[in-house]
Image (cartoon, rainbow, N blue to C red):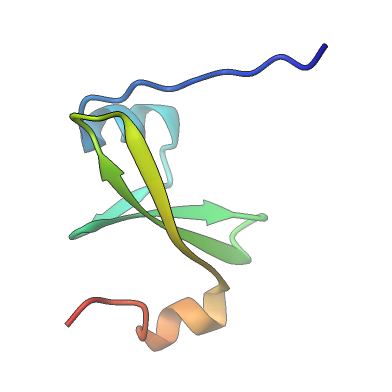
Length: 70
């Protein structure tokens, strides 16, 4: 049987404790994945304990900045 773990972060500070490479670029939390080759862009609703994945892209795509909200 596969083991699943659930995080119940109350703030970005707690996310950072779990993933020290995570960054906050309002309103997104950015995770470095794949040995710093990719970025996972997420929005986290801390009060509801829900994480929404807004995009996964290469570092090159991420650096272009088109993922940012106006």
